[in-house]
Image 1 (cartoon, rainbow, N blue to C red):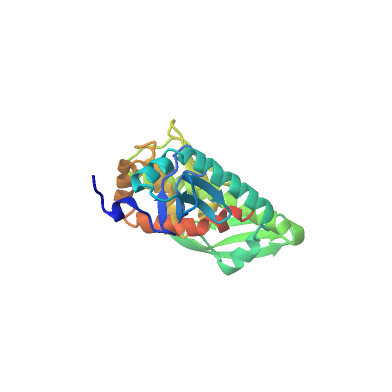
Image 2: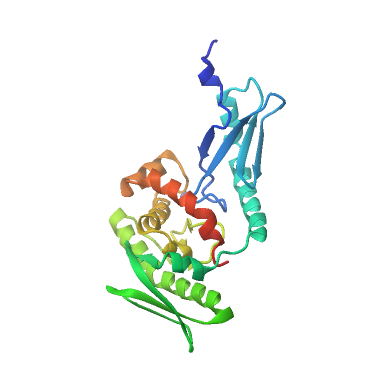
Length: 263
Ligand SMILES: [Zn+2]
């Protein structure tokens, strides 16, 4: 049987977007991009994950179908390896300061909108003022060494007040039911949805622009109908979020920074 070269071959440096298993630590929302490296010296297909991301090493005369089958059979392993590398990277990377981030980006997302922030120090106890429809959102932290911890605590509190409500609003739009909605300090995922219909969301969602904030919530809501990342899952999600593909790419760009902020 003769097949054209393009049906068989990869080009060097080509990238493959893959879905990671829904239950895996890194699997939700982000997926992964695997870089293809053609190697004339390689004897076998190899999948590895370095600090610059996953790489699939492809020896000569490998069929595209064979390589994709190899890759697809290792998605659980890949999700675990990506998480391990992320943990190693965390230990090396200085944590970006929340105060610096908020000075450059003085807003938070809630209820589908971008809300102006008023961040400052207080001589007393830290506090948050958020009155719906009345901008800005006020954050007051203690000065000096306490500032970072206070800002994180205040943003987590803001997220705990606003994310469950937004999730229920979007669930009503989508026409699905949800159980409990919790807000967590997750290091390796934006959110998760359990088989018992509970949804956990990362407090850092309030630092994403409103369209990405809602995209993550819709993603978890789509798991209410499909507990996987099948084609049906993505069709459902695209029906609720018309910018789905673009939002996924933008989320990946935000990932490294926001997942390392305020650890
Ligand atoms: Zn998912």
